[in-house]
Image (cartoon, rainbow, N blue to C red):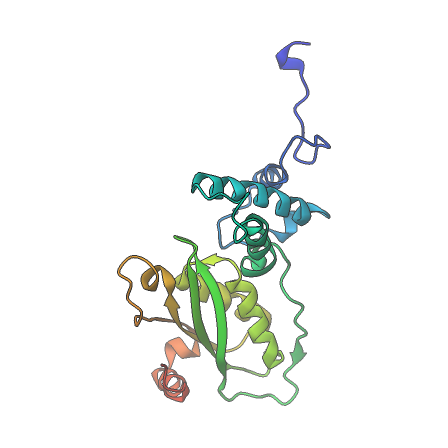
Length: 241
């Protein structure tokens, strides 16, 4: 058979020689979907994909350890490191890329609440997408509801934050992603988020500054238009460390 007539395996071909990461990437590209480090790709995973990805990442992580000239065959401390790192990335610190958003039950604002509500500090953990170093911080969320706003449980704000931060992130983009998500789910008159975090890419490497913090905010709706509301929100946030 000529080369031009040979069948090309599809993204979901049973060809066991095609890595699962390639199949997932093909699905994403066929749908013209972005798959940056801080994107969620759960929609494009099929049953068994995460287990196969775990094996693939383990194999490639072992290659990294070999390239670092670490004798994992005889070093009891690193003999299972490749597997541990693969599990950490897929099942823990980057889990927000591979699972769907947490279920959030929304209730109507039956009592027509319209006063400022603040949730926080919510402890968040992520990793910077430049060096995969930890980002550890806290988030405060301010909501100004209206009679049409959906009400969600306080713990759900923390779950949504955990899902967004569970990916390689840049702090500025992470806060915007979280704001977009809460805005869609609750439809408040105003939404404000402040995040303060320590970046280990500064503390552990580079300038090795242990005391630096990054603080950034997103203001939407009434918080953007009303300086008095914005000042009230910021004044009610406990003194940041």
